[in-house]
Length: 468
Image 1 (tube, rainbow, N blue to C red):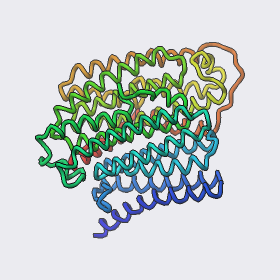
Image 2 (cartoon, rainbow, N blue to C red; image 1 turned 60 degrees about the vertical axis):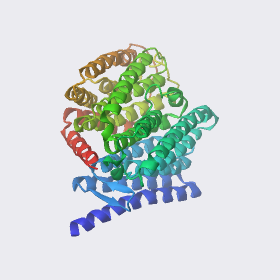
Image 3 (cartoon, rainbow, N blue to C red; image 1 turned 45 degrees about the horizontal axis):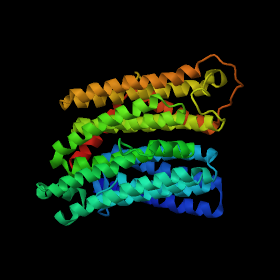
Image 4 (cartoon, one colour; image 1 turned 90 degrees about the vertical axis):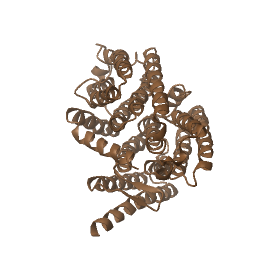
């Protein structure tokens, strides 16, 4: 009894930390104190991460107030997103035009992210995604007039996504008295072609959020036009939230239509990988190149969904965690270099002579994204391709490997430029950027060399989501 009581109190403590994060950052905005806003954000996010870690360690599985599902899957992603938001906050404290406004909006965004990660119903996912999208659009606008175009394009994409999601909900509602995920997984909703149409609409809606081809319209423009700290948030957090929603819906609710959405995700994975990698090759802007690289990485993650198995979900979860740290670290460096007017691949020439830390760190992160051992990106891709093989999808695994080789080319272009002998004045690394990059490198290298802890967590999270 005491064990159950402790876990319930921890669950409510997690919910309280999220609510206090929103309330405290609103107060910080009123008094216009950057330090207070940073302290509040970091403390509450750390509290959320600590509660999540505790609930993971005790392997708890319970429901709170009937709309929040506490299990290994939800807590792993709450932990991931809390840590990622802490890193983005550190970046934004130094490089945001108005950090107090950013902190307030980011706290509301995290509340939406929390709702999606712990969603027990389709309505929860819908509300969480909408909160996240609206606050992110305003965060992009925080850059002033330079962010108007990016914010507008992002808002339009998010609006289309939410509208399609709502229409899919309307199709399902008549065939189920409630929209609880556990209730909708029952056989009562099978055998209806409108449900199949709803599957396609859910996939389309969340494909906009996850930037899957051909639903990635304007995504590179948004990445390039948004402030660097917001780009790190978009690539490292928002896109991963969309994949969490995909897993929750397609692996829990609509498992009866496995053959339909498995083929759907197979096609999406192939076209997204090729599109992202091929277009990235011709980019001259490093930031835009990483935008297309992120699209291709989304394609790799979808391989696990196409496998539609516990192993596939485990591989996708592993790669989502891995890419979150790789891309946040990369965009942190890109943000800092952009502030020094270093944007194109040509501008990166001789970076090693100007700042060895930046050149080495960015090289390690790119090699990890390319899937070079012994870094975490290699482990993620190995698991994804293995899951495809275990699902008898040999062609998908081979095409994934081919795309990995394609990506090496454009990453090598940047690395080659950075280590070109060229005399430039030295650059001093920004300490906020250095802190974020070092944290990401520790994860990328340590879990690359010894990935078993993350594999174990991903296995347990996959098992938890498939039994709902």
